[in-house]
Image: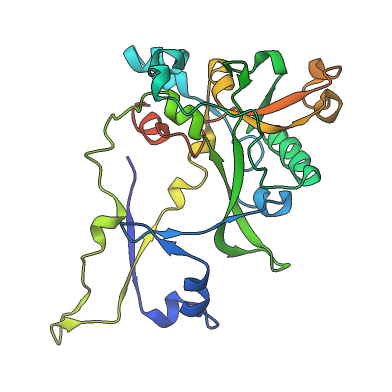
Amino acid sequence: QVQLCIEVLPPTDFLDEDHSWDKVRSGIDLDYSGQEIFPAQMMTWEQVKAALPQPGKAGAVRLLDLCEGMMAEVVKCPDILQKPKLEWILPKSRPKKQWATDDEWRKIVIGCAELGVFRFLTPSQLLYVDGIPVRHNCLGVGKGKYLDNGLEKQRMVFNLDITNSMLRLIIADIRSLSYPGQWQAVQMLDPQEEKESELVFAFSSTDLTCAYFCFGLERSWDKYLAFEGSVTGADVSHIFPELRDEPTLYACSAVLPMGCNSALSLILIPEP
């Protein structure tokens, strides 16, 4: 269960002194529920690592250990979720756009592997559809928070469009859960004057920080969560010495990825 903490703050305390709504609106759009959509950005390791879990946290909880019954079978073998091939987005021979320079992607891959977010597949271990490998890309999304040097912290989002089209969505309890958009109609009233006040609802979500990254997946998921942009075994031999002599390796997510259409259901179903 998620404990919702609500604080009531006057605007002068809630916003920074140099806050500018014009600046905020210039870089975002809104979805249908009013949530902010930040545009995709080229990633750098310095910006991405600021939003990743601390060492030892990624994959610390084996998801399978919390599941039973049919859910345990799904977590063991995601192949049983496969939809008919006619519904798939087929991979293309042309690689997906990489949202990082080659040098930065190498840093991201090595850094994520050291944290336990990534592990690796050889070319023969990739999933192939009509002879074309299934590989996705990652992109950076600004968090609206900044490092001391002025660079914006980035959330690394996995664009798993092919896999999401291949595997059936796990619905679970997501249709019955409350969500932040339900609070949009709430008006803060001044109890003295019975009119709308300048008070602001602030929802704490610190308990959800890096929530996806803490759940480790089985190796059977690797082929569905591989990414473009290769590294060599020598690049990651200090983490995976058994891969030292591999000429080509592709990173894949070792944890429940943000970008998987069933990720929220997989988080909610396990009962500790």
